[in-house]
Length: 450
Figure 1 (tube, one colour):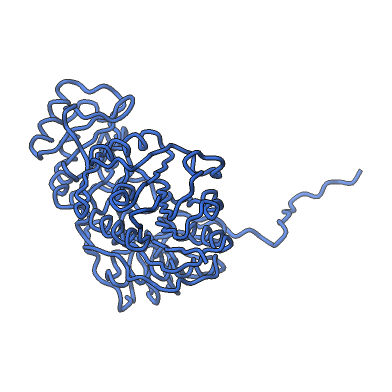
Figure 2 (figure 1 turned 180 degrees about the horizontal axis):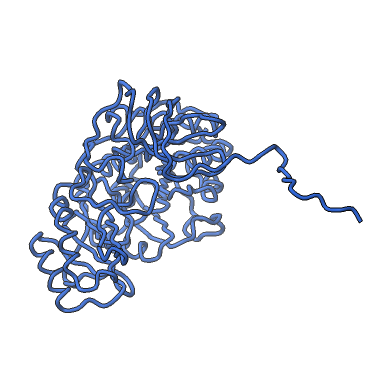
């Protein structure tokens, strides 16, 4: 029997495996260009670096957040040679808070970046360009966010309650005393929230806090154990001082402490009031939301005698304004509680030409009762996963016009391939600047049957 050879190291096919780069390591880099998500891209020793807070052409020092194979994620720690486009970050928490990743770019450059992201996805994935590019829909770059989720966590080792927003590239919490993107009514609540929560008797039982500003201001507290009478008194006094509703989320659904209180938001151009409960989806940017609805109606051009389909209808954000213009709106949503809320919103606004249905829109539209009569036009506003199974059947509904509102250009481009295959052409497209200071892109596209 041959004697085993000791001390050899067998290499995988392709050569030796490079040593992994440790988290926290600092590295000097030259940024080549921007990625689609606004991060800078650099190349060093066979690895691709994605750097938060860096711009093309800059020489920077970065700190590693994580490494996976030949991809390294990092954040900018120091700028040695700045781009002419760089501006001072307006927020004191820039570079640590993970919320606003492109605030070092002027707002017009942010819009240009988002426009490029949408155009690249449509060209690369779908091989199309719209017949017309729409002007970006935008509003104020600060003071726009009417809803925010605040992270709350008890650090048992330090015996300290952490309150703020998640850090860039980690689960750490950055203490926040001021957030420039929040609407003004939420600013004083945000600044005083940590001190109030630290007074509660069971900080380890606290979950997140949600803030909302609409037809009323609301504070929701998620808690994993019953609140004491003293704690409830502290919370109620805090909300009374800020003229805000108090909502609690223990077991079951969120509930207002005062059951007679109503919460919602207005669509002022259409004189509509929509009820809302914490946990429901609602657009965080009220001004851009109204502009988005107006543009969708303009592009869809609904006529008084038409039957229109609204898919992923939510609370009725599009369905109710549509109902004011057409013979009938059929609105479909996957979440049963949202369907019920949308129907209640239609009734409370005296709109009786709307019908609401619950359906799993991640599955093909097969023999749905509400689809049998067909539609003149369709509006859809799907989640990030897009609506591939839905769009596969849209031509069979007879719709000549389709407005697609997207929060993910990649899935919009994927679904565009299918719509073009069905005989639709991309007439118009443009970005919706729903989240200034971030690289998040929302878009709207108009398709017409050939």
